[in-house]
Image (cartoon, rainbow, N blue to C red; front, side, top):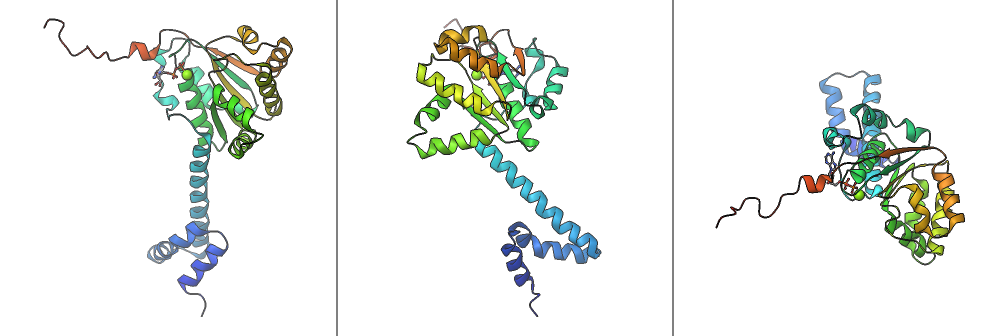
Length: 255
Ligand code: ADP
Ligand code: MG
């Protein structure tokens, strides 16, 4: 008889159900132990495979996203950021903006939580099955400039274009030259109405023009970015500075 456990495992692997193949002995034992019906057994096998696949996909999405660090929205202390309410955060978590391909611009001085919120929203999106890409503006420009000769950049751009959400951190941190602004425009144009973009910046859109140099390109970029957008202004003192531990803290002033 060909129906040995080993043979079944081989067949499962052949069908690309490797997770179930590995788990089969346990699943069979449980079936006997709990006297599962045929229907229950098939259900258990399929839901096990589906669950493992989703877990693996989630891990893969998390890896591809390339977040600089992991901080969730639950770790964001609303009381420390007066410009946002718990209700607003809860609404953002529902991801309606992402479903409807709205962009989001997070503005504010350094240390107020722009990157933290962007990552938190990115993690939320990943948990809900969306593909996310995170890059700083500097990294993004380098990828765009080297796409012609670097295979790595081509692959990164492919992932960016396939993502449902692209986070561009620290926009306009540095001034762009004409070529860079052009490349950036083409990317935004490609992403337009196909994905959501979260931008963080310490300068408002009215100042972006100066940094991009070319008025025409700036207008074209802003046109697309601001067509469907939610702008969130964060302010207050830098969380980093407020919570800084000074090296002298523990020492006595009198020596
Ligand atoms: P920005 O991008 O606005 O410069 P970050 O998001 O990088 O600032 O925040 C700086 C640091 O302070 C990060 O470690 C972040 O997690 C933390 N932080 C900022 N605001 C809050 C907050 N309201 N609650 C918890 N942590 C915060
Ligand atoms: Mg930041």
